[in-house]
Image (cartoon, rainbow, N blue to C red; front, side, top):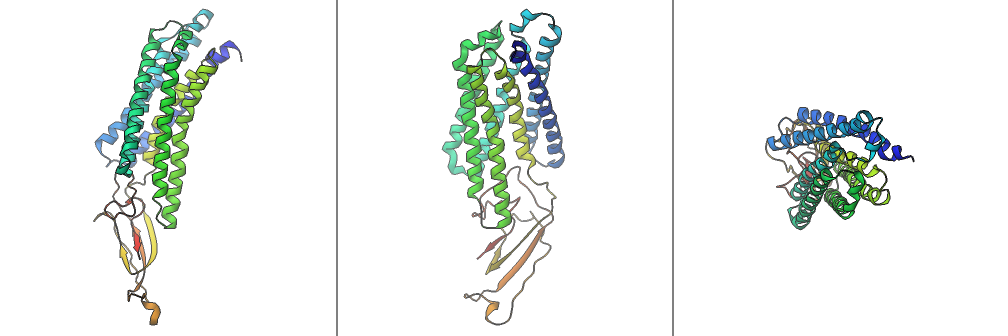
Length: 334
């Protein structure tokens, strides 16, 4: 790999990838605002905030590549100089990372308040990573040459590793909560399995990029591959959060749930949260008409034409006061 390839070829590729991810984020933001107009105002502000920060980050990445490859195209001595726009990309990266990590920490606490110690650990790691990241951003603005940034290897690697650990804990914890919430209903379990796999896959991507960023910073000090990965990393956080939000069903999405129970029917949903359009009771003659307790065989079909969603998933199907309202509106009680 040539000097220019290692320095600005990778930056150019990162700008292209970052632009694509920013376009995807913009589409996701529009989708969110269109599909979920009834979400709390703080959630909408959170989404817009992520988009604004990423827009600023995208401007900084474009200014960086323009500075090196256009403004100083015939000035090879400038290749070693630190452009302030490049420093801005480093400074802005920890902001969406912190916002998204704290959002998922809150999400984990809602899933299971008993996990407060783990939530506290996530918050501490997120704040420490944010502080280290902002320190890196401030320091890089004071440097004239890019090579001087390697005098702070311990700071950069600490920031990225702590960030990766935090992301991994979040992904594994939420995935475990979803997986352990399986109830025995095939459709619900299939959905929770899908959500679990999706959470692990998307949640571990930022962690993998952070680790790769730290490794290339240490092992490839004569290139800017680490800064290229950092540019992409900033976009991954926002896209992960919006992807999580947009996977919820819209407030009027039809959902049909069927099942059979011996005994009674329990509908663990808030009053008015759905409309029951069909309920079928069947009983055969003779001994098969009732259970050993004298209770009738009941076959039911519930069509949820309209239901109310929380702003996020509630996963505790065993607790009638905290049902999975989006996906588990009918439960058979034996």
